[in-house]
Image 1 (cartoon, rainbow, N blue to C red):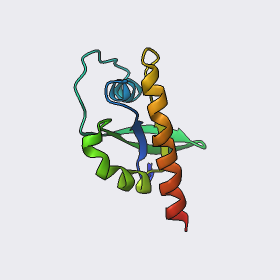
Image 2 (cartoon, rainbow, N blue to C red; image 1 turned 90 degrees about the vertical axis):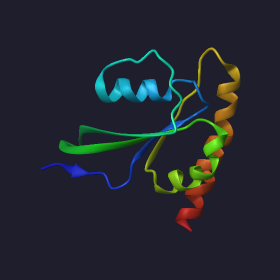
Image 3 (cartoon, one colour; image 1 turned 60 degrees about the vertical axis):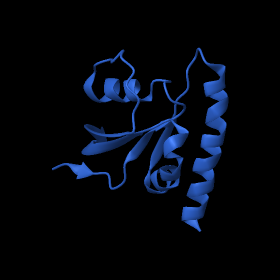
Length: 113
C-alpha cells in the first residue's frame, strides 16, 4: 500500500534559468536535461520511503518568472516543503532568493493564524 502526501512538496523557488527543472527531472528520473525550456508549471510524482513506509512524493515545479507571481501565495499556502534554487555562476540569483524565502515565511505564518 502506498501513502499519498496530501500536499505537494514544492520545488521550484528561484529565478528563471537557474536549473530548478533540471534538478527536479534528475531527482525523479535520474536523467539530466541540458536544454533550457522555460517552465510554467510541471507536476511530478516519485515513490519514496519515509520512516520505513512507502510514500508518493508530489513535486510541483513552478515558473521562476514574475509573470506568474500571482500564483505564488497559493502554491506556498498548499506546499509542505520548499527548496530555494540559485545559480553558482549568477550572484544575483542568490540575492533574489531572500525575498522568496521571506514570502514563504510570511504566507506560512498567515496560514497558521
